Length: 120
Image (cartoon, rainbow, N blue to C red):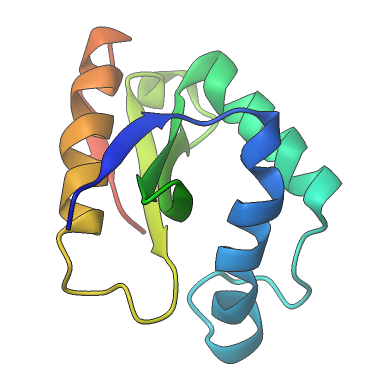
């Protein structure tokens, strides 16, 4: 499978919200009970890209997954630590997409000065 990994933008919000929706509705891993709207997902992308990073994986022109980073904790001693997450379309596990997203995300975080990335 040929993937393109790129920085997310507001235009990716609908695809990211669609990918995230089953994780909210069918699992407990997100700790959310209501799927975010496209507008809320666009806001999250904007916030993450300002201070950390948000990337999408595309296959044949379709967004099939995304990975992002955000603050790990609010205390100043954690300022060089971040929390990372990856989400893939249903049926896209074990395709290498998650690995490719993290392999692109982690160097970007290092460039921004982060030293610890934690997946909660």
